[in-house]
Length: 515
Ligand SMILES: NC(=O)c1ccc[n+]([C@@H]2O[C@H](COP(=O)([O-])OP(=O)(O)OC[C@H]3O[C@@H](n4cnc5c(N)ncnc54)[C@H](O)[C@@H]3O)[C@@H](O)[C@H]2O)c1
Ligand SMILES: N[C@@H](CCC=O)C(=O)O
Image 1 (cartoon, rainbow, N blue to C red):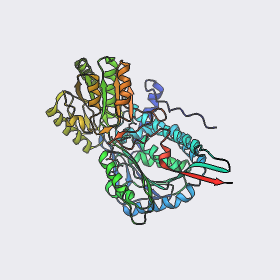
Image 2: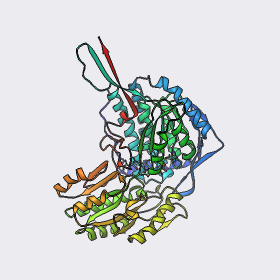
Image 3: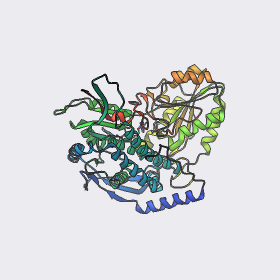
Image 4: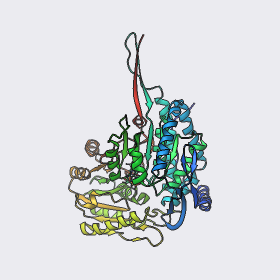
């Protein structure tokens, strides 16, 4: 009997024993760093001359690992291998596929701190963020396994006398999985196992900033018993391997999570019918955000400050859900701004492998340069309240930064910066605050801090985002509790970790028989 789903608890690092265990994991993983990881195609490990080197963004001289790099020929092999494996895999009992996910979850749970330590080194996650990322990966395995068991008989439909109707879900085919680097474990794992558990086979191309954690996860799935060819691992360039996989006539499902530009490009390419293609491709594309914390005049100010700080600076603002905009009622604007400034100045920034670092580095030189260029835009468009400086001499560190008095349509309030920067805009009343919150092309997350019930009810209908939070931060959705996905240019609203997610990976089939 499968136990009811509950999310994986977070580690309490104030408990000395947990702290020691995590330090031990960091030490152990540090000794392992620098190893090489091969491609996996049709169950074979393949080593290439071309490699991707993954380095620690907090200490760029530290090599986390290298991975072999696929080209178009190897991507072709991977698709063919997945297409062949599909014929058996789709006929596996869905429960057996689900149980494979449960076994993988157990393996990760036993070595939880080890995986989190990899996240600390590979993408610069502070302990808590790394722990939450690993917990979410476990949650996806446990949750989607249970969802598949629930869906395996299909859904009830009516039948008339002399007729038997059934409505079932069938597997789709070869899925291409293209995850981002920021929820480097959770999203990579969740988007990989969702097609797998539904009976599709997968070609996974990890993000080039986080291929090592992806390679470690592939090892876990092999250990859990995944047959050869069912999952093929092909790190490579987005432009070369990504495009090739998306365009391939045999790929049937593309699951992408990443930026708006790459996502919309994939949607366009996947809609073009290739020679030899006899199906339409299903595309799941979860993309960027420009998320707002709205503060009403009737609000608990401490709750508001907390929500802004956590939303803006958790994982250095590198979440699609990050609250990079604060839209605050004019009556409390100065007070909230001043308190956010004070709190931001107390946040610790440093190498994430050290305890009690609130903010680690940003992920790479490209991200660092982009975020720093926005500091100049912010100074032109608004007022720098605190922060604004960076240091990329050893790693990519940027101060928590607050800009004030920005026009709602300024670049700072419209474009996804994806760094530790929050921009304040003043609103004359609650209606105007919601209008400002809605005035970007994105619609992913949002928070409203208010003690006014009428205003909260209004926000339920008028604040146009996929994940809306009241009196808390707008980050940190939990699998099975707060299904995640956005409106507008934030994506296809697939709601990862929700009850409808797996159905998007399958084809519903009606079978009707007369007696
Ligand atoms: N909505 C969500 O659930 C969600 C979750 C996490 C991150 N994000 C978004 O992801 C972005 C940050 O992640 P990123 O920097 O990894 O995004 P990205 O778009 O640069 O890359 C995402 C993935 O796409 C691949 N890629 C790049 N070019 C490609 C191409 N031409 N064809 C196919 N694949 C290609 C990359 O290698 C990577 O694996 C932000 O915009 C963030 O908001 C969204
Ligand atoms: N699901 C995560 C964000 C994923 C994107 O980065 C959250 O809710 O904070």
